Image (cartoon, rainbow, N blue to C red; front, top):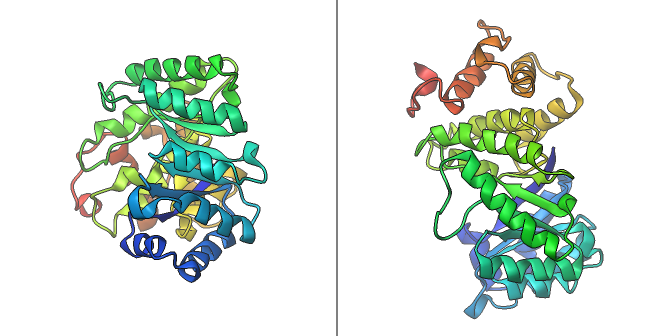
Length: 308
């Protein structure tokens, strides 16, 4: 699974202030930490980038390209900022726009930019009328609409990364399964195939801080078993990166990795959770399986689910 590092975002108060104040030292230190993890892309999440934040994308792109050749994911609701950033790209065909929805105006504008620069595009299976549909087949319908618009501008399927969208498990845990089902449907419904991605940390938003990393890691493994191609992740979570390597190589590095590998296998083979193989005497493996039970809607989520 390819990884998009999410760690430069103005949701963080300190990062937001650093961007506003053009604090190059802070930004470079943050980027250096991300570069060390060697993600496939670095996401630059600058929000709407208006007013005092105008010009942010160009400023950040200049800094990143002075430090690394790692491709960028340009993440903004402001299409003009995205285009300004792409205009500076040394290899724009390796970059990603994050993102478009199925809304006609946004879709038309962003596909124009993707077509102009030859880059890839993350597409959210939602629109302003429906929001995020609760059913996988409705999300698939929106994906077909987006794919059709992209095809009209000669954007090939291999440049599309569909995000099925995931709601926090503590808000509606049924949606974790629906997102997994959507990933499978997306991988099966297009010829040539499209790519898939997901904002991984969304699945644990609102959960207690101590639970979030485990929920993210287990969901990543389940999604990998469903065929997901990439994920937007916290690249400072070393254990998450290690587990991704375990799944990629299919080689356990620690005793509890067998539980992750077994979860991957049952998802890949469309088997039930009861078929998973794990050591019930290993507390870490038990936590992994309990988390899978929550994410696959076999048990009801509570903040104390690991203690039950």
